[in-house]
Length: 229
Image 1: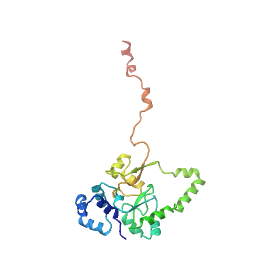
Image 2: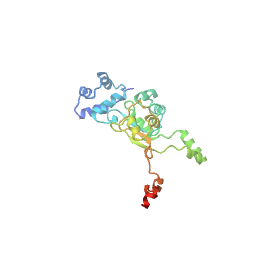
Image 3: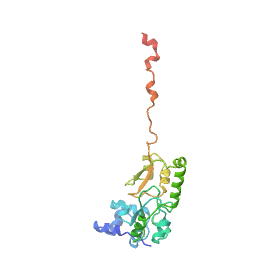
Image 4: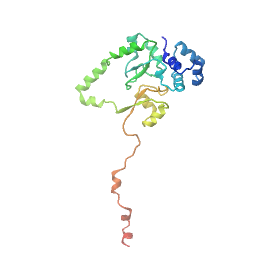
């Protein structure tokens, strides 16, 4: 199945830019440019170079569809007939054949013309049966259910310049932990506009003043002999 780069061609036409000019300003190879013309798979690195050169988001140059977190690629395969392996190859940043569970909307790259089918299928999407079983189990055992709650978290929308290392420093955790929270790998680059789950709470290492410091005696009281003079 071919990939649709139609949004990219429309963007180039609007900016009155040729494919040759795109190759020159982005630094991509002639082979990558040829793959664009044939609708073949390209690495995320190549797509990000193009986005950087055109100052745009990845969903502005390739056909993507917002998909809720936790949706298995095998389920999408059943809905539109696109092989799971084909979907996985179009989204190499996924370390598992499922959209990141903590993303409210994950921009999934889909085959040409399949966007409408995916959206229609997602409109009727219901959570897997195991989620319902987990809810019923927690309702019967409130204490156990409370212990299984996920840690507090916030969301972060990826912008230009964000890396695994910079986000790890910002949220005071390791890059590996942050990637694991989102079901991804640190070896895969982040997409501009992508939404990630990040730890919440007070920044690690932040110190508070101890209440006991207020009860310390003045230094003068230690030397009573001097005070009498």
